[in-house]
Image (cartoon, rainbow, N blue to C red; front, top):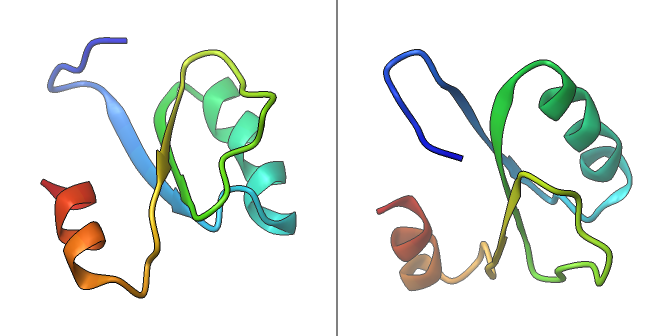
Length: 67
């Protein structure tokens, strides 16, 4: 998926958790470019979803994610 100035992009933290995993398909269905961040990346991944394995308590990993 390519980005342009009209792309709506969102980063969902805790994406593999109870609330996050239910929010992902809704965001995709509404045209968002979705980046999912969690310490655990599920085996089954949805198409057009960008998964990032990250420990949000590790500032170096967070900095790398947000570059």
